[in-house]
Image 1 (cartoon, rainbow, N blue to C red):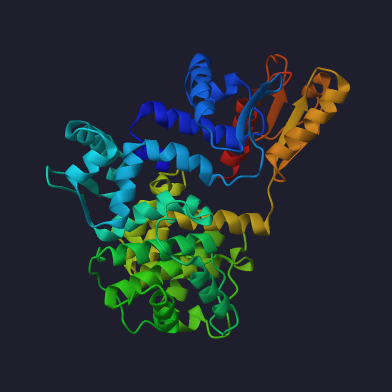
Image 2 (cartoon, rainbow, N blue to C red):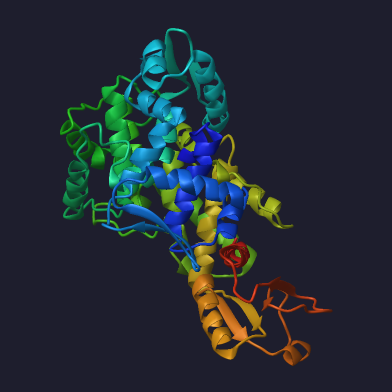
Length: 474
């Protein structure tokens, strides 16, 4: 996501190139060019520029096997980002606005040696990326500031910074002690209100809330139940952990911190003895049971044998705590606002939505329905494990073929079954419509989907093949 707010096209491409080199031990120029959607000549030019700027301990090597980014002394990846990300005016602007309610325009222009026209042009590009968060940056001759709900601004920063939280990038200039949050979690684990959480996800919220409150950027008012039983269980502990950072949470800020903590909770959770969601929220529990009963009947599977009821209860509970906040938090992952295809989906969505809306009024339930669908898929796989079958018919050196089949099995994962077959067997076997044939030679009159690979498959081919497996489950 951070790449999207880099308005400088060349720099954005170079950072994408660095990412590819970090994620792949060795990669050929053709695959790099394809991955970042440019030409091989441009890749070579960018590599020269990147080489000249690499921090101490990093180097790029080229061999017959491909191009490799080598970290000689196990230096932190932050060293790379500290060199390249600050070159972007967009990153510098977003970072400055993170720590300040507004910034003085002339000061920012002088520090970054740009004109106000250039700044406005870049801001227009950045605002296109921010539109899904329903916020924008306004630039005047006097000051630069965000326009929009503070909750949406914090959600933007959470999406931007969660991948960097573990190595403290963006937060290194501000004294926030992640140890305080870990101590808070550790203390909870020894109590009757223990809960399993995504630690980095929650730590990032702790950082963001602390920094924005200290910058006098107050969360917008919204309704919440001050006597909500779950909120009361964690309220004092959350107040104390923020107090250690010199932040004194009140009213909506305290509930917002609780809601952020709730967002970090695992599904398939194991709770302490004092956490009985079904007793505290019987109406929501009833809705979860009705939804699972409907799903079970629809697909003829005993879904209550899985954790689906408990997982739906937790999901619906977030909307019960604050429907407005839940709909705000949908802004963080807009890619999940997808329309699912299939003849029964619209009927299912309407039926499930009707069950939910009887208790919870949700203006646009599509995002929630997609999350319900994902939890349903997880439950189905828990009860009835599925695998997609790939038939591997390959003409080549036998030792290489055996090695390649094993590599394909690793790439596709445990949910895929790969069976080695010969050409003549294609006429004899009975295939399922979902099966796929993987081949390196042309096949005629085959009704199944055929995925062709090279004698030495490229990274792009392997990625596309893995995506076939992913699509099967979604």
